[in-house]
Amino acid sequence: MWTDTTGAIHARKGLALPSNLTDDEWAVLEPFLPLASSVGRPRKWPMRRIVEAMLYLLRGGGARGLAQRRGNR
Picture 1 (cartoon, rainbow, N blue to C red):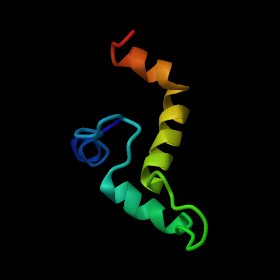
Picture 2: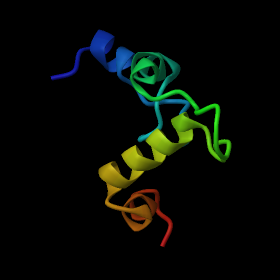
Picture 3: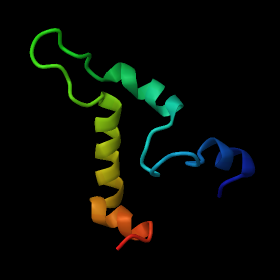
């Protein structure tokens, strides 16, 4: 059961999608991800966007799942 305190801590308000990371969550996760390589092609997308895309797919089972929950059909 959520209390008012834990509900406020874990609220997903202000995010574009419920699967997006808050800044605090990203600060915890970022040190575990590889740095950009100094050789080869530069990254096209920031790592945060890539992780958020994976979480989006895991949470909703794909674009269709979250779109239906948001009322888009």
